[in-house]
Length: 175
Image 1 (cartoon, rainbow, N blue to C red):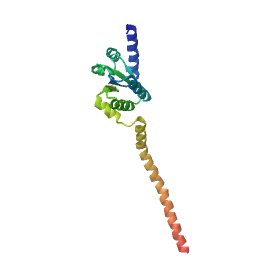
Image 2 (image 1 turned 135 degrees about the vertical axis):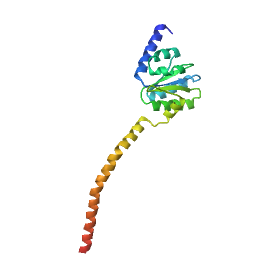
Image 3 (image 1 turned 120 degrees about the vertical axis):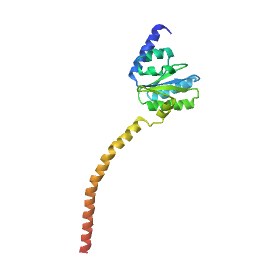
Image 4 (image 1 turned 90 degrees about the horizontal axis):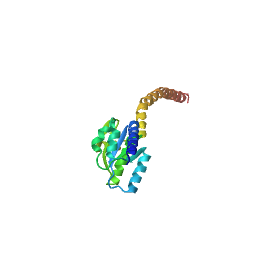
């Protein structure tokens, strides 16, 4: 690889690292082209991108960023998964693929300046999706309002029930 091309790769990776808050390193040794293509498609559907980059170029691009914490893992065949949106969805894809393709192994990850080991990545993959978490949060936030509305609706309902009972009693007295 020419020196100019290496500089361009490092510069592009530095831009990517500055615009994302999460990434995962994987060892892809042993995956065939079809498996690698399927993995890339699955990751693209989860708003992530898998790139195979030389370890020395990764170290240079990570210098001065939170991704520098993964320097110890830049060894052997390494592919970096650049996560653009939901880290839990990407972790699900990677752990599922690692179980499906025995050759694929997770190395480490970074999530908002925090280094994640393989166990943390598997725990992240077990989290519900962002949409589910947001709906659960909304449900919790709305519960007091719903309870208050129910209590407020109970007062007129009780009053109407009492009026109806009085009406029925009066009708019985007239008959």
